[in-house]
Image (tube, one colour):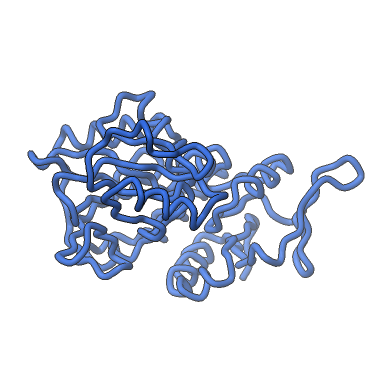
Length: 288
């Protein structure tokens, strides 16, 4: 593979095994644009401050050869380290910091006045339930969870306390239960451009994630919904993200979360959108 522009595609090893198809597509689209894109595992990187300077090392590849990195591992600290060395990260460390902590994500959305479900920020050390007056059921989400994992339906203070005790070092969001459970919408956004949207549904769970067995079909946003998505994406300034929404009783969008490392299986299965090609076009233009 040859090219004047060189970059790293950074994954955790386990995630790379599950996403080998998308990795291959990204590398092929990069090759077609005369970009050298090297797959690098996060576990093989060492970084810190050596001799008073920022350092990132790999046993085989030289950090000095690259000008950009596609971050498909969730590690805002590593992204920030790369940026300090002049390497452009897609997405940036600031986007990663917001999107990979649900409480921080909700603070971001609240500043914009985006409609969402009532949410409490809780942890084992900061919740005893004595003054908690919310009605059940509720949804308890680990702040750094993703893919629908570490999300629990709880019906009492005792259930909440039990879950918090199981992960005493973790932060959680305790959220009102949706009036329209088992259904959500994911919008795929490249820069500030919407490239697709899907409706995910489950008849067996309040979680509609495609990777957890939910069904998926195309969703076509109306103008008001596009405007809402644009308000979020223009303020976040992400490169490639997925914005997830729940639905209220009237079928109107309620903000749920933002995926920094957004999975594309549902988009590829419901449309002819080539996300890998569009992403590499976007990256090449940004670097030029």
